[in-house]
Image (cartoon, rainbow, N blue to C red; front, side):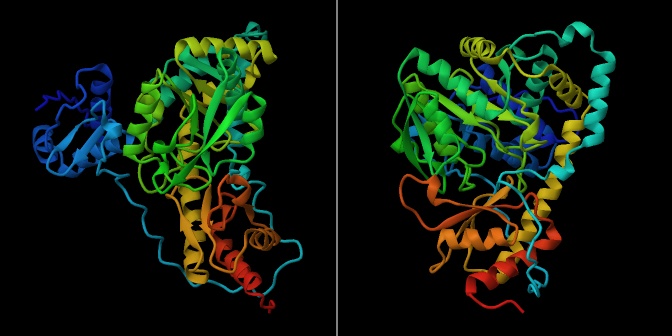
Length: 474
């Protein structure tokens, strides 16, 4: 049994997070080797003088991230090297909460000829909540304090101040293993993926596995970058790793788009084994991972295997797509190649915005904004799901409680084009799933809730019910 030597600062709070962080670091550092059995939760809780529930929460977080496995009769242990071949019994430890009891749903008395507009894309954030004053303060701070020389052509990989702040943020919030030296600042995830694929395809022809279904907007970008795409089905546990083929894979493990599922612990372990066994690369799109509502978000894959995983992210969902600020975290040799490619392409991202984001991160403005929006988006999702349960129970909501969109499986008799037309006439942000698929599947749509006010959800769903039932509006 391992002696864990866990240090807790009780004045900082977040005891479960501290325990998980200490264990994660011990596993990464090699002090806890694959297969090491951990103490029972009750025993560790007694040793640390904390409640057993706190230790259970820490263990469950690391099981979900793939660092630990838990099996009946065996206990909890550090993930063995061959865990990908083992049919583990652990799953994402916190099943989705049932929706809050619905309030009285109001039937739409009238449908305005020009309804409110609730978003351009299902993954669009609510731009009305962009923190204008705090962002303006950050820009003013930059203009008042940064030396003039900083506004010259700089490092195409990004200003060091932003890379340093981002590295600290990703380590703290996404459990990434990253330093500023292997971060490259880019103009969003799309540009980041383009640069990564440009570098990889310069080395060899690339067969890139992609999730099926996947974002149809990314497909042309990936092909234009020179990748040959290989679709791999997604089910309730995420990407089906058993059906993987190719030289690399692009995944959205924290919240798969469009289905909304999370990559299960056993699939995470199997994916890492697949990557190491064939010297392959995993491209991780971490597009909305900060917005999980039923539990802490699962740590990124990059933290499990920083030498195999290239992590991409941006502020497009957290702040605004129009900022065009994102990042790529890659192994050092690839990060340097991506930085050079960025320099050859357009010399780098706008400097003032990079300094402003660094200041926003350093002063806590980014965290504060995320906490606020996490509460608001959870409220809006709950309102939409409750209204659907009350008015259209035959429509099935799939996926975890997270992100900015819901995946809705349609009942018999509802087809995607008609549903999309009806929903858009009510101002909803909705897209059909069929264009996102390579193989046929149940009729479904993706609906954005980030811009749908909670108090309007019942009215909109009631209007959709009227339109889809073919009834006239009172």
